[in-house]
Amino acid sequence: MPQPHVVVVPFPGSGNINPALQLAQALRHHGVFVTFVATEHNLRRAQQAAATEGAVSGREGFRIETIPDGLVDADRDQQDYDLGLSKATTHGQCTAPLRELVARLRGGATPDVPPVTCVLPTALMSFALEVARELGVPSMVLWTSSAAALMCHMRLRELRERGYLPLKDDSCLTNGYLETTIIDWIPGMPPISLGDVSSFVRTTDPDDFGLWFGDTESNNCTKAGALIINTFDALEPDVLAALRAEYPRIYTVGPLGSLLRRHHDEEDDAGGGSLDLSLWKHDTECLAWLDAQAPGSVVYANFGSLTVVTTAQLAEFAWGLAETGRPFLWVIREDIVAGVVSGSAAALPPAFQAETATRGRVAMWCPQERVLRHRAVGCFLTHNGWNSTCECLAAGVPMVCWPVFADQFTVCEYACEVWGVGRRLDAEVRREQVAAHVGEVMESVEVRRSAARWKAVAEEAAGAGGSSHENLLGVVEALGVSSLNSE
Ligand code: UDX
Image 1 (cartoon, rainbow, N blue to C red):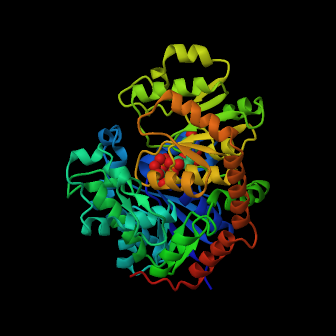
Image 2: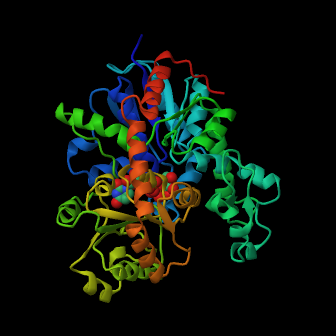
């Protein structure tokens, strides 16, 4: 049987590139040939950010190819860059280049490259499923958030049909309607407030792009031959059962970072070195700083690759961290505050910088999984992006949650109310609440015990014989037999 060859096509943001790269590496480890498709812009960024040249180059059984992202430079400087990317991919700007690439690789005319047997985009990349269908190549899709978030986004359509969406008028955004309207009919899910279904419900516009995109892209996942989710069975059993009842070809393979760790060690030993397509340069010196801190003492704050805050919110978080009296590592992306050209850390109150200079460390981007697994870290102040949440669960660290966008509200609700590992901050950031919640999760025996328990369950899922490990082998087998018919 020829070697299976999968073309992995992530949505061009860190929240999708990172898990797609992890999955791609895990598949390669099990003998699958991988072509990883980056955008030209992102590959340039990753090369500039890389610690070593080898980190972003192809290697045996793993090639990197590029397609354009459909944007011009001026679009990339916008705060809604992510939205711009979503529109560009939706409007077909990436379709022809991907079609040409897959067609070229499909035929097996490239020396030392086996013919393509599967196209595997992440969520938000329906056009890639369409390309696979047109070319008659089987497909799988990687949903990069939780199973509950997938179920919620799939139900945006029904929420619209039942008259919940779009919202009747702007008052619904602020009068408590989103919090007090309880949706208790989503299969496999506990009752959830309308506001926690998704950020995309926050609209009065029937033609809102985000609402349409969330609905369409989540439901389009079921058009793939199989659906891979970066979660694990024991974490979301009810909602996974409900999803599997609707669509049986689901492989849960998370936490992908845990699944990969063992492979990495082996490959580093064999001289392969780690692949890294980070779009920002990692500040690895913060690890040495963590080494000097007491176990479980540090508050780690990081809001991912997309969150934008105001100067006032940044100041409330700053003073909240100061009020905890604890050491902290705070990652402040240079563009996290809109309009601050000199880098967002410059927007921190000078008095805060002076007061916390000896116990706080600010970085621009860090190797997050290593930070979360560091013994000094005792709390994660997070926006509940799914990767961050999954990495945090795998590391057994309690969290303080401040959801902002898309799936983060659903993830926060599960973290706090279902998994018992976090406390949610109000949307309006207040320093007293930041400090109080940090203190509470770090001191609560109950929260720490839950966090430790989920770490153990995650390890079991990703270990030999665990559900995620077995499901990964199932994906490899399915790729080998090539029986995945897209709709
Ligand atoms: C987005 C969405 O916000 C998220 O809700 C969705 O599930 C995926 O896409 P993002 O906001 O960037 O992603 O958050 P997250 O999902 O947490 O992904 C961030 C990734 O970047 C993680 O893998 C994290 O480890 C990595 N990261 C982040 C770093 O390596 N270093 C950092 O300093 C910050």
